[in-house]
Length: 202
Image (tube, rainbow, N blue to C red):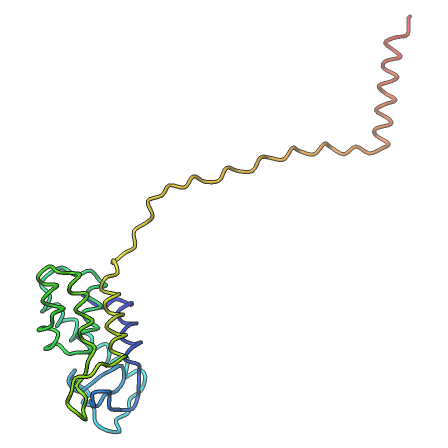
């Protein structure tokens, strides 16, 4: 199973694409669409730069790893939106954390609504300066977006309403044929002559 477009758009929106290595909010070297060394090659080092095409290729490779992790962890059937939300979460927190998460546990136990709510728990990072868990507003927004995607039906149902088509407008009467003035006078004379002929005694 592969992540759908909605999930891909969500990941790209929150990760952003940077072509030069940088430290993320947790102090981890990152490049491209949120790629870190923990995801595999290429190893991210300070001053590393890549092209946009390389960033797209790295993301495609990374996603396969997280898609496989979700499929290995989740025991129940998932619809495309649920799978996409899981992959986004797994991409962000890593396969190890995802496998142990309340999100995965609740879904595997059949508690779908509870699994959706559990997304919201993953909105904190360890502050690299203090070592304390702190809420990150960007993560809070991302978890809310993942939860919304997770709870979105895979396909919208059609409205169960039968609407009769509008009746066609009444046909306009055909206009009377236009007769020139000369033709009208000639017709009147012919009619008068015929009447006189029928009346005259022979």
